[in-house]
Image 1 (cartoon, rainbow, N blue to C red):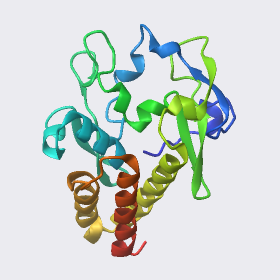
Image 2 (cartoon, rainbow, N blue to C red):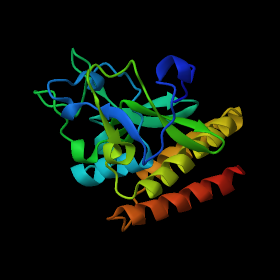
Image 3 (cartoon, rainbow, N blue to C red):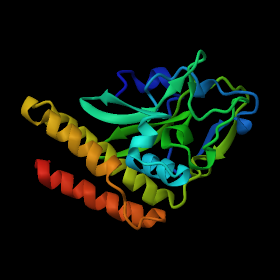
Length: 221
């Protein structure tokens, strides 16, 4: 989801990489779940997020989208996002104590917070959102430790390719005769269709890379 704001407005003015230290550690979020409430449809899931939720919860596309996940239009494409529910508009995965029940396999946007990604020149770096987290006195932590993802470079490569694929597909979907086909293709190929034999991350990444390459070939991007 593209944000029409300047980096100066929302960050500390710095850009970070995996091995950089950043003041993001909020002490296990003890006593706070503010960032898991009232987020609307902004917690968008990529294919890896969806695959991990499906695999760890034992639920398929239909079961997830009938419960904690919903579909919405994002930059002209239909993509899944975490559903907010109840009077407090809380994430569907929060328990009664305000703790995340899927923390070990939480989505990438959740892993990032309060960091964000700044994309430019075919790649990205991280920035610290200075107005979003309510926790004070955050401490410094290495970006890759905060992200808590095995093989951070492979993860970054996947995230980067997915971002720019969506950007290119979104441009193609602006052509009315292709919009429906592209929307259905993205949902079917990347979220509904199982990643057969992908029990570990490297296998998932290989299959995702093949599907992204096929998408580019199909739509000439």
